[in-house]
Amino acid sequence: MKTGNKPLILVTNDDGVYAPGIRALYESVRSLGRAVIVAPEQDKSAVSHSLTMSRPLRVRRLESDVYTLDGTPTDCVIIGMNKILERRPDLIVSGINPGANLGDDISYSGTVSAAIEGTMYGIQSLAFSLGGEAPFDFTVAAGVAWKLASMALEFGLPETTLLNVNVPGLPAGEIQGIRFTRQGRRIYHDAIQETFDPWGRKHYWIGGGTVHWSGGDNTDEQALREGWISVTPIQLDLTNHAGLDYLKRNWKM
Amino acid sequence: MKTGNKPLILVTNDDGVYAPGIRALYESVRSLGRAVIVAPEQDKSAVSHSLTMSRPLRVRRLESDVYTLDGTPTDCVIIGMNKILERRPDLIVSGINPGANLGDDISYSGTVSAAIEGTMYGIQSLAFSLGGEAPFDFTVAAGVAWKLASMALEFGLPETTLLNVNVPGLPAGEIQGIRFTRQGRRIYHDAIQETFDPWGRKHYWIGGGTVHWSGGDNTDEQALREGWISVTPIQLDLTNHAGLDYLKRNWKM
Image (cartoon, rainbow over all chains, first blue to last red; front, side, top):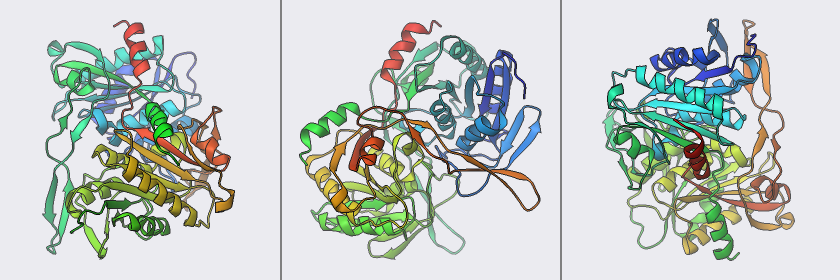
C-alpha cells in the first residue's frame, strides 16, 4: 500500500466495521491523508483491552482501504500495524462510539483500548465517543474528530498519552466548545437484573441502572453534562507514584 | 452467608475456578478470615477488564464457599459483591496467575482487572502472579499472598489503589525479598505467526516472540529479573495531569 508523504491514519472501533460511527470517522479524517479502516467483524463493545491469543485471526479486505478481522479492537491495531499497513501510521483514531466513555468506565471500553494499544506502539492515538442516546447523529462528532486529528498531527500529543474525546449528543449550536478535562470517578455502577431461563434457573444480567459520579471540578463527565466537548489525556503508566512512597514508608516488611 | 467479625475475602482469577493457582490462593488466605471463591467457569486469560452485558450470567455453587459463573473476572467481582456475598468483603484477591503480569502488559490481564474492579468498589484488592514457566509450583507465591493480604488488612492500601504482585519463579531460598516498584514500559510486543486454515487461507496468530523492556530503575520487570518479589501500586485515575497542563498551554483551539 503506497501512501507517499501524506499522513497515514489507521481507523478502528469496537462496534464493528459496519457501524455508522466508524464510517463517519473514516470520511472525516480522509481529507487529512490516507485513511485505512481495520475493524472487528462483529460488535466488540465492553471487551476492554482483550487480546486474542488462543486462536488465529483471519483478515478480509472489504474495499480498497477497508479491512476487517474476527477479533477485538486491540487485535485490529496489532494486525493492522504489523500486517496490513505498509508503514507505521502517523495517527490512530478509534470510534465514533455511540454512547459516552467517561470516568472509570473507560477501562471497559474497546474504543479507548484500541487507542491505548496504539499508544503502546508509540503512535499518536485518539478515541472518540458521542454522548446522548439512539438514534445517534455523528455529523458534529465527525467534525470534532477532524479538528482534533488535525491538531494532533500538527502539534503532537504528550508522550505515551492518548486523547479520550467525548462529544455531547447536542446540536452543533448548543455545544459550548472544547474543554481539556481529567477522568471522573464513578461512585457506583450498574443495576443487576434477575432473569430466568426456560428451565426456571436464575440468571443475572449486568446493566441498566443510573451511574452516579463523584464531585470535583473539570472532570470529563462534568464537561459533557454542561455541553462541552471533553478531551482527556490518558497515560499508559498506571503506577500510583505517591502511593509507592506511602508503601515504602508505612509497610514494614 | 454469615461471616461474623472475621475478615471476608473474595477470591477470583482469570484462569477459571479449577485452576491450581486459585486453589493455592484460597487455601493461603483462609487462615485470615472467611474466604469465598467466585471465579470464571473457563479460562479467561487476556480478557482484560471485559464486562458481559449482552447476555445473562449463571452462577453455580460447587462447594460451600466456591462459586463459578460463565463470565469474565470482572463479572465475577460484580456478581460476587452484589449477589453472592452477604456483605461487602474486606479484601479481594485475584490469582495466582501462572506467568508474570508486568509493565504495560498488565492492561491485558484478567487477573489484574479483577483487582481494578474491586478497587472501583472501594475494596482493598491485590492481584498475584507467578513468574517463570510451567510446571508452576504455587507454594512460595501462596505464602507471599498470605503475607501481603494480612498486611493490607492491617495497614491498608492508598486510596483507589490496588497492588499488582509478581513473585519470581524461584525456590524460596533464592528470592531476595519484597520490593515496591513502578510499572515498566514494554518496548515492543509480540511476534505474529502466519498460519493457514484447511482451505489454504492465511491467518495471523498473535503471540510468541520476546518482550523487550525499556531501562529505568525500580520497575516491576527489573525487580523480578533480579529475583525480588515486585509489589506495584496501581491507581484508577488514568489522567496524565502534566499532559493536561501541556495541552491547555499548547493547543490553541
